[in-house]
Image (cartoon, rainbow, N blue to C red; front, side, top):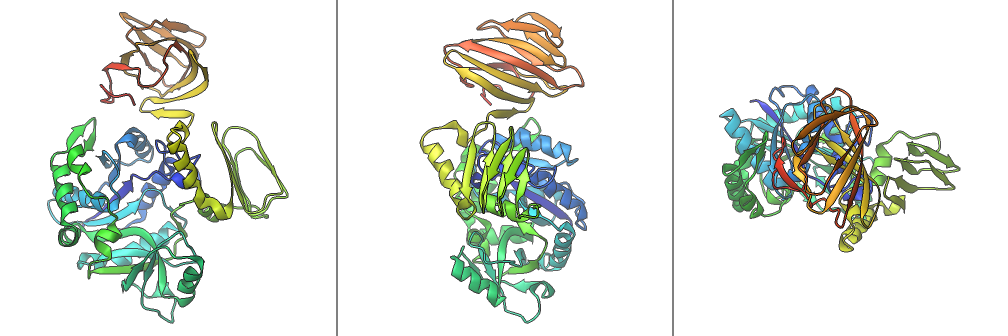
Length: 479
């Protein structure tokens, strides 16, 4: 039976703010090493036996171009399915099972993975998948339970039969119970008993088995997912699920919808350096540390600090006398929190949202399919941005009703369209775009194009845009 990897890429990672934002979530970040977590997930697939088919990747519609760009960099050629809004993992798994079944014309094995996990020993993970495969082919729904290394209150647990030998030697086992995230004393008892594994949220099962079980235990999810996929539309190389049908789907996880109810649940113990990187504290746990237990990234000066995570993204960060702290600096925000309060970062994001502040959703640099823009300065009536346009990329043909723009080329070559004119500008060249003029920028060269843009007007919001043509299918949109 063919193995189809399914990568669920719809999370937001709010506990890793300010680095992770709603519009640039943690799976797209290079948190451990040079590749993003999504790209690391793709790279692990090459070690899996029998993973001959390209993966199915399910992501939020708002992240589609960022995800597609990173997958191209990773050398992957996936089927990208767009969710108009998040509905947790059970609807996503059902969409994947239906799509994979139709693509193959027969039953297939689905290896369901999150895009934002760290696995330090990918070969051990590949071995666990190989161990789970016969059980999945026989109709069981196999999850991977991480052998715990310490009491952890941030994970759910899977109860198995206690055994005298190490859990990793036990092979595929029946699941006795799924339990919720415990308090510390309960977690300590779980770990000491040897009968509990961390619930990783990764699964291996056949498409037919999953569709049968979802039909038995959550038929409304199965029906809504089928309607959304049947009405899906091809959109600039993506498969976009029908919004109304998918929006009617109940929000539910794989565990709650099926795994806690089925009689076919099994688990394979996994010892592979796994983490869901759900907080800055867990990122510290999987990061390389110095002799004082610190993980320092970027331009950091640390004096007499221990067991701390300090990250500088855009400037020097100097710290002294810290013990067990998290400090994260970005271009528009600084986070300081004790390590044992790292889960409270989510409360900060909730408060930003309550106050209507944009910092919870996006950073100063905003990514687009053609590149990005960085807001350098601004006040009522003006705004200064740096545009970065990738080689061969082109912005939409557009106009603004309430602002004029002045462009200065810093590096690369810009091909400018301004109403009926088309002309090229090199470094030092500049062009004025009057209010109401149709315009666009293209990078015809092989070097990244950088432009300083000065906007002047009585309203400078990103929604003041009218698109006439767009390579990326965004006519009528403001993203």
